[in-house]
Amino acid sequence: MITITDKQFRALRTVFRRTLNVSPRGHGPPLEFRSGPDGLCIRARNEQTVIEYRSEGPIASNHVSLPFSVLTECEPGKDEPLTFEMNPDGRVTVRWMDGNIPRKRDYDAESIEQPAEFPSEPRDLSANEPRLLAALRDAVETTDRDSLRHAMNCIQLDGQRSRIVATDGRQLLVQTGLQFPWDDCVLVPGNQFFKCRDLPRNCSIQVGRTDEFVMIRVGPWTIHLAIDAESGFPEVDALIPDGNQAAATMSLSDSDADFLLKNIKRLPGRNDSNEAVTIDLNGSVIVRAKGDDQEHATDLLLASSRRSGEPIRCSSDRGYLSRAMSLGFREVSFIGSEAPLLCQDQHRRFVWALLTTDSIIPADPDAIRIESPVTDPAKHPANHKSHKPTERTRRSMPTSNPSGNGQPTEEDSSSLSLIEQSESLKQSLQQALTQTRELIAALKRQKKQTQLVQTTLNSLRQLQSVDV
Image 1: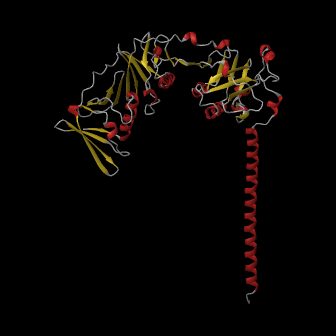
Image 2 (image 1 turned 60 degrees about the vertical axis):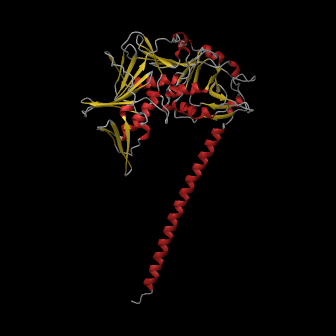
Image 3 (image 1 turned 90 degrees about the vertical axis):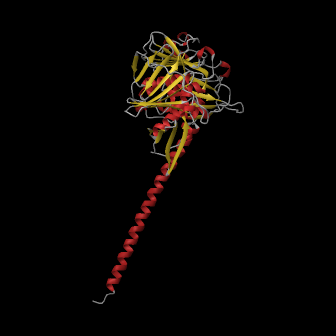
């Protein structure tokens, strides 16, 4: 008999479905259950992927295959285990509790087609820090799952340069400082396994390779990804801009990055094919959008952020700008108004292509302006320190905007934004509310004192009426 907890079963259902790309009611490959002195192993495979779950601890030896539908047809209650009983007639009975009601299903294991041969474990394994899991997840999110061109549905594991590379043709993510026990580049499919929340986040990750598969082990979970030896992969190094050649840099505070992430999807024009926004670095840091049916643009003014270098304005897909913020980048380098944008830190470089200059939205003195809350300078010293412009910057620093070319006007700098007015009204209402509460409390105290005095006077009157 094999026993599985409800948590293990639900994790199996989620991870196996996502890894093998099986819809909730779809038909998946057979599940192999193998138990013995080393514990329990549950695994399944398709043409490109093998997924395994292992639970340590001695258990009675059994080997049986069951249909994938077991994961959908059985539904144990919370904290209720499932048991798999092997019957003498070759059938398997699965039992569980649904509340207080016992349930069971019988499966004819002998009628299930046995799975193809599973890959062997690699001889050489490299241990990686837990951040490898996040790196693989981010790489998968950079691929194009539906594309077959240049293997853009794959991720490249470069053993020689100790890095992971992924691209969808418009964005590119390179992550370094990772250990692989091979000296060349291998391509493996970008699998949703690495996005599963059921995987442990703080354990060492083992990586190995055979001639046909790359194996990655995360705690009790092991995935084998088929190596794509036929497809080509783009030469990405030539596509990465040199940050030292940046004409301008946009530095965002954490609060402004959060503000941008919350509001950028709500900007007009989100139904356009490229969901274009204009990044305007002319004095202030502004992200601008405008719908086809709108007379005036909408500006997100990032009040706690700054620009260094030359003024610049460009057009970007809002999805890639949001992704840069979601990846934790807070600095964006601009080479030009059409050159790709670059974000980088110690181990990562993220690049995405800009849209053409035809989609740039010019500055609008009547734009709807939404300003981010100004944060405490002490909390973001890097974004509030004084910035002395160089001679190059000083010559090109904007002072006026008579032609609407993106440089701020005096009206722009002096007008009170809608957010400022709202904040001012909010503070006034909060102050009025505080004063009202204090007045109510004072009236209540006065009422109690009046009642106490009245009670005392009544008591004295009663004493005076007593005949001594």
